[in-house]
Length: 317
Image (cartoon, rainbow, N blue to C red; front, side):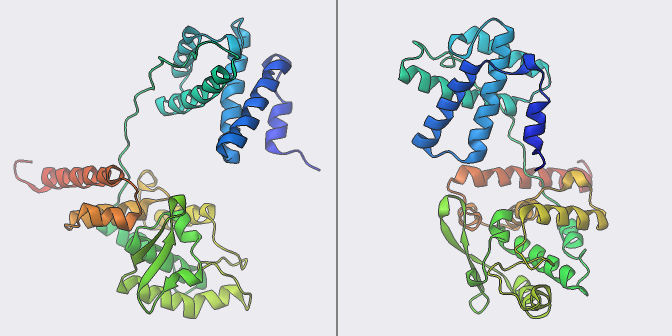
């Protein structure tokens, strides 16, 4: 059996880079407790392991260990990471992992004081969501070749995303039983397992009907699949496949790659609704945000767009 990329990378580490056995056991014990107490996902546990192993290697090179790491040690470690090119966001995530680790060690009596207690979280600049102009959105939506089943599927997905503001994960996880074309609504299961009803809109409904009638049966060739959007392999669409599809169609539409993100049509949905006078509370419900503050960032995007419009067209802009 071939080694996984992770196994190959681990095997390639120099002996001096490997952490001491007692440090490794300490980390594994923490991960087991974190999983049993908090039910952390596999990806979260992998991130904790990576963060703690990185600190353990640094401590070993600086005549210390995880349980003997002081606040000054951590301050130096974070500073060196910053000088080495790690972003503030990366360091903030790392510090969150370390706080969880050291809080547990203090609770277990392994250390007297939490060295992360008075460390400041790096300040993060909140990036504005990337939104396209309405003309660019039109070009992106019209890019697929609707004469083909795949092109018709892509067009229906684009139309639905722009009409509803779904997250990509919500889109690819849609089942046929969640789409009610007769009533013109979707029943979406969002973050935290919360359901919401989202209106589809006439244009998106027309393209969905065409996809269901002319493309989906061809792609499935008689196979029964619950997923609303399927691939030529007769399986559900994935996030990765959708992102590849977006980049391909954006390139053919002449849209700058720097303006494209997996959620670009969700951001456009929100920004363009606000530009046309939508209520922020209503937008919060449509997007499935638990907090209004999350939705409010789109007001900044809309404001920036208005500033650019003013600068471009006003005689004294």
